[in-house]
Length: 402
Image 1 (cartoon, helix red, strand yellow):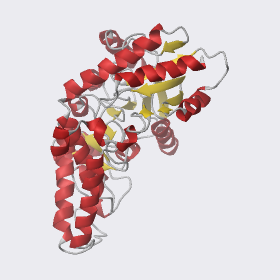
Image 2 (cartoon, helix red, strand yellow):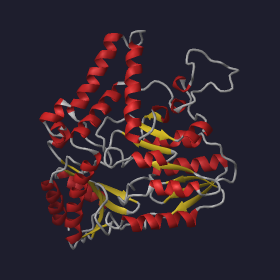
Image 3 (cartoon, rainbow, N blue to C red):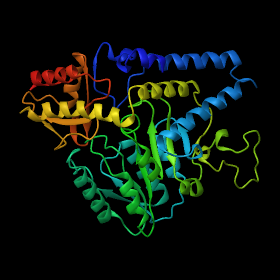
């Protein structure tokens, strides 16, 4: 916390010193203290010896501290928090371990990331499942009309559920439109369904940006990463799992970390796996990343409580949304102010450049946003490290284009 006390987070991110950056939804900048924490951890492991009896207590302590911290952020006990490499593995490993029967159904929203969608369709092919569509892209009311969105999503869910729906897949914050989904209410509605379908939540755009505790506690699988809004290193994330996932899902990829006794192969043991979240962890991973992520989360905490940080993000996204909404050549996807930091928009561009070409043109000016394909649009993200002058710089650069 010493770094946070004498500098704000922006000043600690070298990536923000030479560019105008709006791609937090893809990957956040890594603060220097987080990189230093990782380097210190690597050095300590080498001092102890990377494979000695002296190093294991250190590695165990790093793992336990990280699991406990992420569990606290999700409001779940440590035994329900598995460490993962990224959102996709956090979604897929528990999902593929569930007991399916031919004819069971997956209900997937029309705003899910292609990686998760592809994994669901491949699961359906292998297990002879049916895939249904949950239409949520249509809900673009923004923050002030969130109650209308919530009601609409719950009605769409009711209309889309089938008697044999086994799993519902729905992101917490939609990665394309930026609309917030009512995860606790969805979970409650599923509990009243005859099959009580499992709820899988992609939280890629949530952790580090919006409060996640209520949603993580409500979902069966709540998968997140540390390298986006949490501004941690790539290659480390987590997944909060419900008790019934722990009781009913089997390991998918299996390694020594999945086993209760990693020292020997017990061929005739019908259940050699951990009975907690560790059954979904696999094998050797990069321990120093844990120190880096914890440092990034500590720096975020030093900038204010979750709700305070969200208010800052909302103020910035409201500013950008307002400027775009008033511009005759731009149309934000959301009809109202964004509930978080994702601001997606379309341009009326008479010069004919594609969104991908616009991204490259802006990048040549040191301004970084991204283009999306479903729907076709541009996306700019505001974080607590964003400055108001950067918003104006982006809008002025767009105006030059159109």
